[in-house]
Length: 88
Image 1: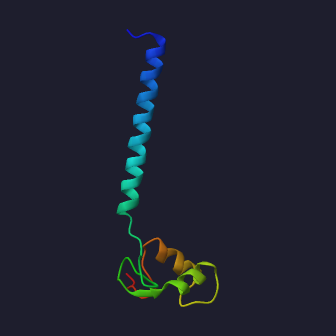
Image 2: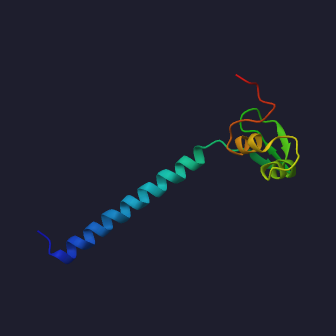
Image 3: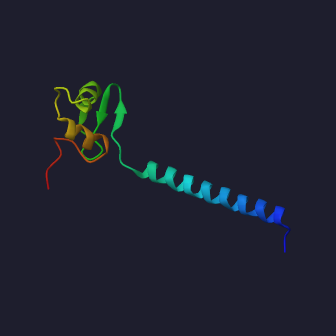
């Protein structure tokens, strides 16, 4: 049996390992998420790879007049497709 000081240190080390495991899992999840790719001023749809002007997407996210609505832009940036994607 460990003395109280060593037990406290052991518990803290276990908590730190658990925090690291959670951070690693969150990082892996973020890497797997589909996101639009960005290249040379365009975002490319994560579903159909259609190019969209990055400025147009940004102003749509603000709710201003653009090629897509604010809702479409939010879905696009989440990787859920663009207005050109085939509808199910």
